[in-house]
Image 1 (cartoon, rainbow, N blue to C red):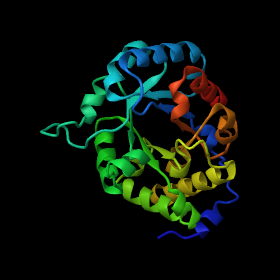
Image 2 (cartoon, rainbow, N blue to C red):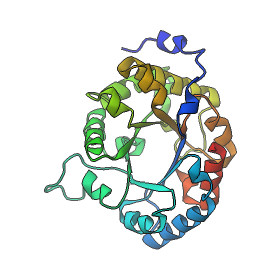
Image 3 (tube, rainbow, N blue to C red):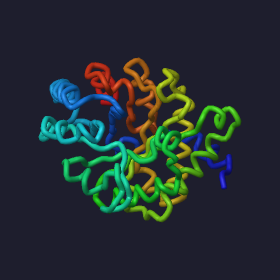
Length: 271
């Protein structure tokens, strides 16, 4: 169970090992961009980020229908691509679903799991997050596992309890070696698509807590290495203040990733 002293115990920790962690900025295109539009955006990002990709990991995550088109443009660019979801079965009569191997066959190396919109609109649970996560790891995809609280949960003072519940259930059964391959995305649900983002203090508190919880689950070494992104109305205007925090290792960007200039500005702020 959650204990408040878990956060208090880490309140003075300033992320002494953040220099070991390579930052990662991922753009979630959600249900936007036709194939032609996706190609244009990928071409623009390839030009704008030619220098930055040497210094951090940049990932674009388009709809399934755009993956092959984006792959054709971004191959050998230093920019990676991934999918927005996957199903845990390898194959079968599951109309409308996409497997990890199908995603991997496009050259994709990342996949988002448990995004708040999947939880809110499509009945995603911590248990199904866990099944999808294990399928992704088995296929050698890097999962970006999303966790975060709703506005009522934050207002009730339950933020850290929610994060602990989601983490323990979503990551259940993984060993330290597997956890090192996971990217955690803290996305306060109340900040997604609202234009309101967490303050730097709120983001750092949540990220510190997540890292300390990972230390409890898998040891300090794993906690020092695992990357934790912030997601929730990240924009060029607030990117630097969020991405400079000691326990924030990058960003999962939504709306601002749909335009080349704004996404490039966020990536440059992370460098």
